Length: 460
Image (cartoon, rainbow, N blue to C red; front, side):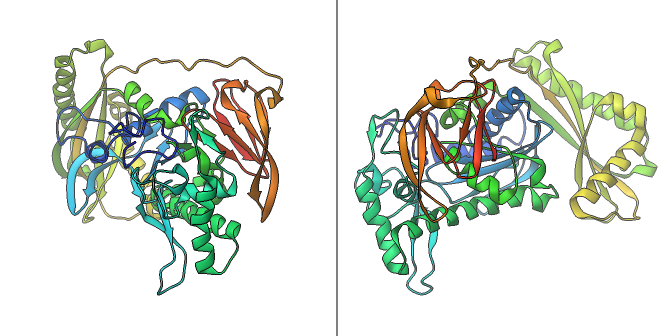
């Protein structure tokens, strides 16, 4: 299991890097892509494209993604089945001018270490991580420091075994480690464990606000999809904080990044600087340049063996108010540009500027860059449909259980996801286990299984 693996990743401990979570280096590559030529979408970008595939099959259009692994959480925003892109990516102290998916990362994962600084005596969680070696105390691999996974074990949110029952957890070891936090704070064991979970959820909440509220989006208009080994364990609680419903636990969430890599469209683009007032620009000139650039990008995909009939061309125009130091990219197709002209472009820019910044200006509009994008065919991979049930999930019940909720231990039920049927309704608190992840349905919420196996969690 690699240092970036999810807590319940199915990779054997001796295998590195993990085939589903991947090493750290491709994370950087996935965000950066390439300055020119064919973009390389790998984890965490693969998680976003996997979420797109799930959203299409589930009939969802607006999604916030919550990819929780062992060391970090990656978040992104998908609007109308289009993920947000950025043109500049920060990698450490470097600023890379390249097209990439807008993925934000925080140091919050199953291996994040909880501690109480001597100076402040206030509980902190992360960004330090126990990684895969020695890992959380509950893994029994020599770890001694309390982690988010240990807190989940103490609270009963993780059952006594993972990976289909083949990986036993050291519950007593987890309790001893979290007790050190409780002693340092002078509170009870369960309160300390819940405090660890609340703090890591707030860290995830902060990252999601960065890509939604701070970009002018209302998170209440989005569903929240949790994946990665630990995403479904936290997605219900974070959805409460965001007001983003339903909270979605997709099928096989621990390997959704790999599915995303398999369903990613081939994409290439080219850009050209074009700094000119819109009022002084000819629509025909802009169209001619865009068509010339489109031919270039289509030729690049054709060189990769893609038939011309399978290639889709799109255009983007970067627009700003004259004198501004930043621009807003607007996607458009040739037919729309011919029909609405540049006046339609400026009207869209005003609308988008107002959404992002809540005001518009009287300054002249200025074109900054022209961009042509060529896309390969979409892989039509249909999700298998589940047999339909009668709404009663009792056939998937493994056993009764107890977990911490609302300040006390509450009765709960553990279910086997492989035995759930479409339309099954699971009242919380409940735990749904599968080989590569664990889904927590909190008290006061209910999970409904859709036609293709996703668990959609909403307030009861």
